[in-house]
Length: 337
Image (cartoon, rainbow, N blue to C red; front, side, top):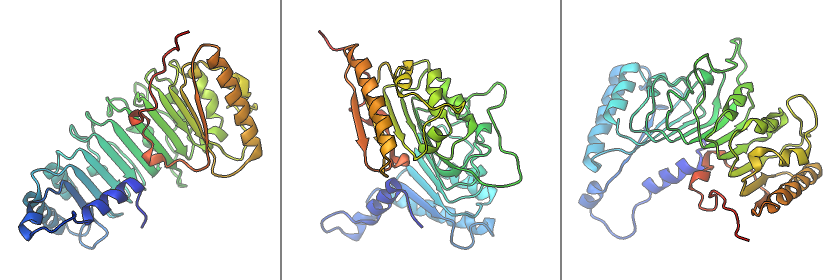
């Protein structure tokens, strides 16, 4: 089983003892604000009593190590019984970071929280958010299925969300996937948005957002013509990056995208950082990007602005994308003449 880099670093950190000698009592008193639940082992889903007993045992051990658990991580493709899931969340309700990995339908674990500020779903088959995350600022869906996501990924459930990372995949089944947000609802109004993995038609709803400052688009989004949706942005971006694919660039109408026209979009009028992630050499991509970058640079220099343009020869690790905490990505200021 592979773990995302960020989560793997945490596991290694917890498993590595601190330098220097320490007594048994010192190790016992050492804070351990992280709690991991592995439901791959037998008993978690078959018996509510067994699961409840294990949770209470873990709570007693956690109480011996720290006053409060800050990071809650749950692995496993088995369902936690509803009672045990509610008990687990109530015991560790003040956790500020939560990760769910390789789970099918963890509905009971996604009921909302006034404390969690970072939520990661990794290889989750169906994400159904059943409540409000009033403090959540970062949401990562890494290799998750998304047929029904617009039903609960709403501004009402995520009122203060700043960073949204959607690395999605599609699952074939007989049920008809949800095509858009329901009447009266809209997607979270985020400042940083990453769209990669499988592209969905409802991505277009994210572009009616006056808060958006940082945008990354994966190759599939570009291939389906969603790059042309930048024309609908009402606020200029601070940074833009993309994973190029071997396909030619087209608009949603199937017309080849013009580099000069794209560079002239209002969304790019205040851009300070432009990146292309290209882990496979494709000459026609380089030609298009070179033309696009030249047009961008010419337009911004005429207004007295600088633009950092980079072509990066590797694939972006979407789950670790965090432009809001990148000191180089600040709102641009006009140069004094």
